[in-house]
Amino acid sequence: MNKDFTVGDVVKGKVTGIQPYGAFVSLDEDTQGLVHISEITYGYVKEVSEFLTVGQEVEVKILEVDNDSGKISLSIRELQEKPAVPKKDDKPRKTLQARVDEHDQEGFNTLKEKLADWIKQSIR
Image (cartoon, rainbow, N blue to C red; front, side, top):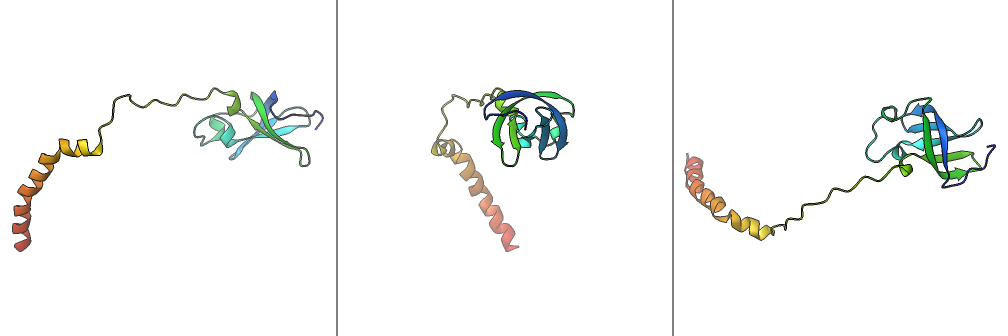
């Protein structure tokens, strides 16, 4: 590594390789880092190649630097806006008992009416 890279730095790089587990990004002539598949974008990524291509310029955030092994972990996702969490309806929910009471008679009447038929069928 020619340059000291610090965790939290945002740098530009070029995608140099794509693997099933992520993409390698060249940060300078001598330094490469890996953007793991989970750090490409929010949500599920099935194929890295659906989001990145070799030669593409990308902006990445440095997540981890291991000077002993020379490995650098990168993230593109960290630079993206987090998607909004869908809001649940503001309607008050009915309790389970209220929903049972709503359909109480129709459920038991049907069962009561069919019970006689079931008994006749089982005797045959």
